[in-house]
Image 1 (tube, rainbow, N blue to C red):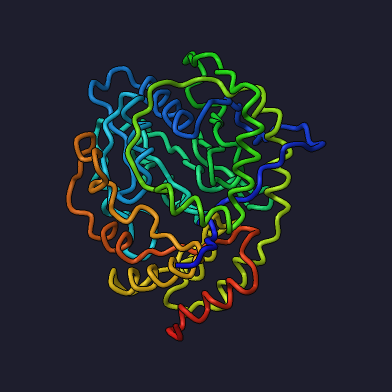
Image 2 (cartoon, rainbow, N blue to C red):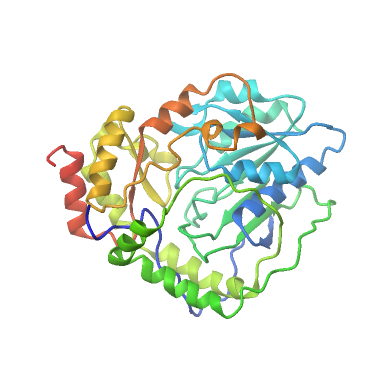
Length: 371
């Protein structure tokens, strides 16, 4: 195994800068909270409170995704119902979503997967006969881009500023609430927790660990990037230190070139290029998602790429239902064949600034079967 190892995702945190304007979106108000999970949970809580007459409220989640989606729903007091996705598309399977809807449904969460957007217009049309259902955008893996034709469309959207996210502050999140969505429901959050003088040092250490030499050493000692279910225990405000750093980090993120993603696309066979097949829905990618023929091919490539220290990841590896401790909290109406196929075949490649030309050449040789 290579002594050097690229992180799967992550760019350096800007510890200073001249930008002072916080992100905003026309028609939405911002609520700054301590995590992306908290932001999504707050959105789901508002969706639940809009319909106090529904005794057993439900939210529909995609069958493949981060277990933090489930944690957010549990804290908000809504039952997660899993709907299937496409075998070659992280977006909902329309028939599965339609079957999952019930009179108890108060929200559908539309997940932006690594920069691949859900089909929000189609979801709006599908939900047109269910006016009580809120459409919540989960953009934890993407930051809305000003150049997008319609950067946001949900009744609310949640963002994350956690480790390895597009805009990282090692914690924090935001909920943008549509002006017409639950305007009369009071929002209660706990006061911010002061991260103290050590926050900047933690950020400096994080920036250092993005160096392939240091990350390679750390990955041998710690189990980095493991997918686990972690319950949410509080919703608190975002601390002033992170909030002050946010504008400069958003500015830096939106100015970063997308050269690595472009070069990876050029070296991939067409059948493996997931963004290429969904081009109209792709923005800036947090990682480059690759679709293999099956689990055997994925695991073989993953092993070679990992041994070469090239930052490959299999993401969650399982449908949400099969992640430890999740099953007890969720309902599944029908099977999840698309989610299982997607989980078995997905591989991601890093697109951050530490990916150099030599790393890309190694990726190309491994993906072409020359190593």
